[in-house]
Amino acid sequence: MILITVTGRLAHQPEVKMGRQTNFCEFRLLSTRFARGEEHTEAVTFICFGEEAEHFCEVTEKGQLIEAAGTQETYHWTDNHGQARTNVKYQLRWWQSGPKANRSRQQEAPRQQGRTPQAEQRLPAPTASPLRPPRDEGRASDDPDGDGHSPDLI
Image (cartoon, rainbow, N blue to C red; front, side, top):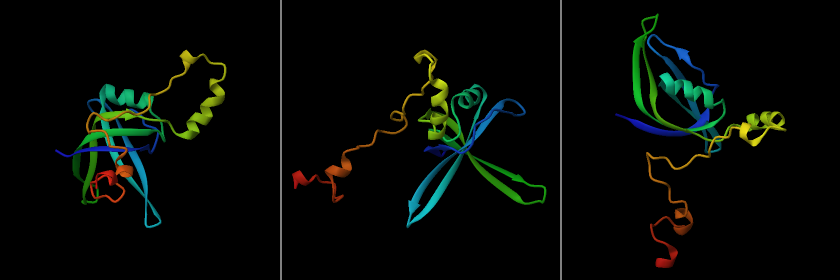
């Protein structure tokens, strides 16, 4: 079993779709990195089912930062032209929402004027994932040469 944990932004507005036996939501997370002066965008597709799909679609929006973990599912089929096709998706096992995209906060600001604090819905900031240990944030400054020793201990 292959398990991944991904942090990225939602590529599109998630929506619930009806399958043969249950409803589902399929969404893509995008992450951009720069290497050798070029921008590279990576994408991962997740799928969830039933009540989890409905809940995910209700509380998330395009561009929102999401941390998700899932197990790999590989689908094989033959298309109408007889070509063998393969598609890899990850079945959602755990997720956590982060800040929404800047554009949605800017659009919401005028509407929220005059609203009571109880009417506002804010999602909590992401916390440490239960699937992996927290990173040692001070490590880089304590070990500038990367040899595993603090400068004060040498």
